[in-house]
Amino acid sequence: MQPTEKKFVDGMMFKRSKEGTPSFVKGNISIKLNEFMNFIAQNKVIGEEWMNFTLKESKGGKLYLELDTWKPTPKGTEEEKKVIDASEIPF
Image (cartoon, rainbow, N blue to C red; front, side, top):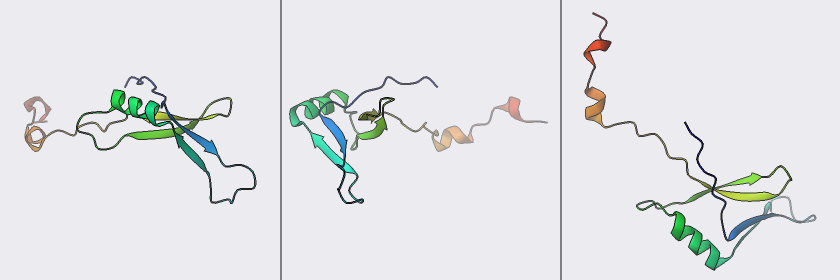
């Protein structure tokens, strides 16, 4: 499996909570609407309802969001599963 090209999210960022904030508040998400809407338009997959992001931390400690492009491997149709290769039969 080849690694896919990383796509950093334009127009949306995550900031950790400031010291003194209640412990249940982990951070804030800010969205710069024009940039984010352009990012969505350029990266939207037709037919998909969701766009997923992964929150990561750089080696320098800065948090950033990356577009999650993972898709499950298709399992095949029921008809494809029923087909047996005769060379695989042991007798």
